[in-house]
Length: 194
Image (cartoon, rainbow, N blue to C red):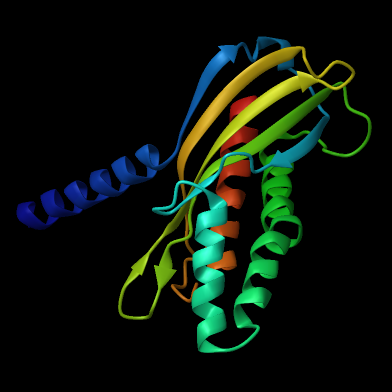
């Protein structure tokens, strides 16, 4: 009985360690003190200098995947490349905003005094081929500026290794896995700013 209890506690503490180390938010410049009580933000998303998987640049990754898919079926790679970009506005960013609003208690519509700029600096698309899988993840840089004077930086933060996976394991679609990373990032950044 003691062995079972000890094993259970060990597994629980290991799971807790994995989830707490999965994403870390670090304030790298400025302070969040001025943002205490802020109830409205503008949010912008950028993807500047983003690496993808083992590729240093997004362009290298997209070119390779596009060529692979087009080789298998004419036009499939072009369609995939279009989805790769369109998923940002239709899937990733809305999920981030939804969880950010929920966990920060702030709204993201209107002409807010502050603008939060989320730049995705790295994306691991992961994979799921049924018998094996690798979770997606993203790294990001958050810059909070005054909306009227965007050169006035209030604070900068980084968030790393934000995991993306579905609870059911049926995340065969790259966009589905990555959108889960954005949802988690929105949640964690929202909690940090609250």
